[in-house]
Amino acid sequence: MSLFNTETIQIEELKNLLENQIPIKIIDVRSKANFDQWHIPGSELLPVNEALQASNDNVFADMKFNPNLPVVVVCQEGFLSRKATEQLRDLDIEAYSLAGGIKHWTRVWNTAEIQFDDTKIIQVRRAGKGCLSYLIINHGEAAVIDAAVAPQTFIDLAESHQAQIKYVLDTHIHADHFSRSRQLAEQTGAVLLMPEQDILQYNFTPVYDGDQFNVGKAILKALHTPGHTNESFSYLLNNHILFDGDLLFLNGVGRPDLKSSGEIARQKTAKLYRSLQKVLNLSGDTLILPGHYHQPVAFDGTLIGETLKNLKAQLYLLNLDETSFIDEILTNMPDTPPNFEQIVDLNISGDAGNYNLIDLEAGENRCSSQM
Ligand SMILES: [Fe+2]
Image (tube, rainbow, N blue to C red; front, side, top):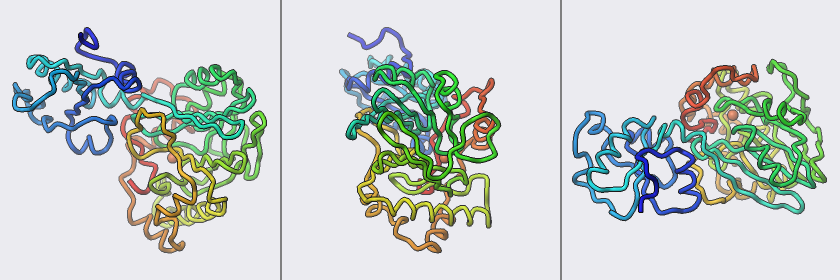
């Protein structure tokens, strides 16, 4: 029996297949360069892009497929995958084209949870983009950090844990996705907490270094950690878990160069170094929960995070002196992310207006210096 009675499936249907571990084969028919940038976890690149672009027939004729394993075909926007699906079906393979391709996949999210004493933390991961948001729940109250998916997602998660969203916070002004924090605060009546700065063009409650906020019986302490951006903050929960935005990732540190270059970028990199030293002074057992992940997020419910002492052991950048750190960062900067200036402008206005966020946010995040 077939999984679906259509030739095209929606991103939510693929998400359900992955979450329920239904055996399927996902094949990607884009170019190797596009695949290497970002892909669906577990997918396999087949070297058929040029042949499909040239409208060749029988592109898969010489390839072996398991006749019992349904195939989902992925391309950039869902057009080439339709051609590929038709050809696979001609070979009697149960094939489906993913509607909207990898571009729509950037909206898909999944979750992982941890319990720390009486606090539950839900990590909400944009599987197709790597943005990580957090819901902190303690004694019926909740806080959301860096809301990167639709506000209703957090409202539903909070309700399912009988919690009221009290605070909505961003770690910084984002350049890779539109922040949904303002909308979420408006829809829930929560207090919108944003790092102190004079850039944002809408009303918010400013956060200053050392401020503390109660979420139920948990305490969230604000630490100013500039560098990635000047206004960047990290939030320390009960002196044990650090939501550090784009300061420190599992594979490297934040990039300090966006919207700056030359001496300004050098000064920002020096700030980044000092902010990292501030964090490195915390207990080695501190759990670092970053704002991004550098790989496609698996549907395995495993939290993306690491203790500070393990990151220090794994990342050479955390063991350099200031001059070496600055030189290393500034000489190894990856390409700037697509559309970052428009995204920053939208985040400054706090209003996505009529922008197509799928188009704008397409592509992987590049907030890290080490991609
Ligand atoms: Fe960022």
